[in-house]
Image 1 (cartoon, one colour):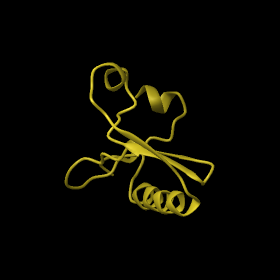
Image 2 (cartoon, helix red, strand yellow; image 1 turned 135 degrees about the vertical axis):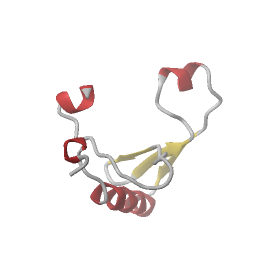
Image 3 (tube, one colour; image 1 turned 90 degrees about the vertical axis):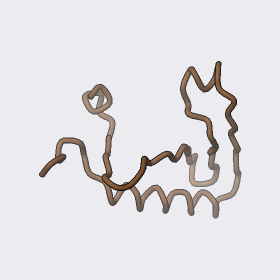
Image 4 (cartoon, rainbow, N blue to C red; image 1 turned 180 degrees about the horizontal axis):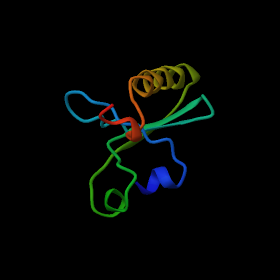
Length: 81
């Protein structure tokens, strides 16, 4: 995996469906979220939406949800073990 070899902390999680969250949390106070996929195609071809929320409480809630999912995941190298 190119991301792993570049040093990114990649995680996988088993379960029903696909994790489809698209969220950026900035400095614990700003949340950027929506249908936007952060890809060239989304920028040029798709009809997407993006919302920017400037609220520390909302950012804390999004960060808690991210931490919950992250803590239930594992690195790809541990797959099948």
